[in-house]
Image (cartoon, rainbow, N blue to C red; front, side):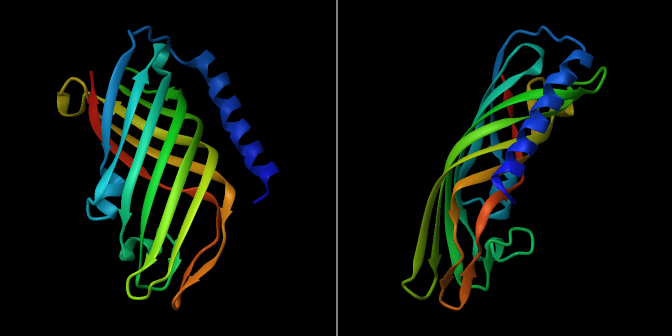
Length: 204
C-alpha cells in the first residue's frame, strides 16, 4: 500500500469524525481520567509483561489517550494465522510501543454509556525477534502514524466507572520492517500494521 493511499485513508476517517460531530447529541460532562489494562494483547501472549492505556475524557466524549505496550510475544502468537508476523516456528519476540491517540465519537447509543469512536494516532514502536535455539535475532525501531476505530462502554455490570474499550488501530511504519530469515523461519515484511486491543479499566 502506497503512502499516498494510507494518508488518504487517515484523512478520510478524520473528516468523517469531524462531520459526525454535528449529528451527535451534546454531552457536557466534566473531564475525567481513566486507566485500563489490555486484556486482549495479554491473553494472546500468556499475560507476559504489561500493556495498558491512560486517558483523559474531554467534553462531548472527545478523548486523549496514551497507550503503553511491553508485550513478550509468544512463538504461537507470532506464527498464528491471526498475527502472521512469522512464517515458521522457534521465534519469540518483544514488542515495546508508545502511542498517543486523539479520538472523537462517531455514534453514541441513545440512553446508554456506549459509543463508537475513531481517531488519529502517532507513536514509536520497537520490535525484537529472537530464535529460540540459534543465536540469531532481529531488532526493529520505527515511528508510526495511523488511525483507529473502536467501541467503548462505561458502567459495565452497573458498576459506575467500570469500562471496556475494544480498539482496532492501524499504523504506518516510517521505517519498514524488512523480511528477515531467522534460521528456517521468516520474519515477514511489515509496512502497514493492524492489531486488536481489548482494554478493561476504570474511569475516575
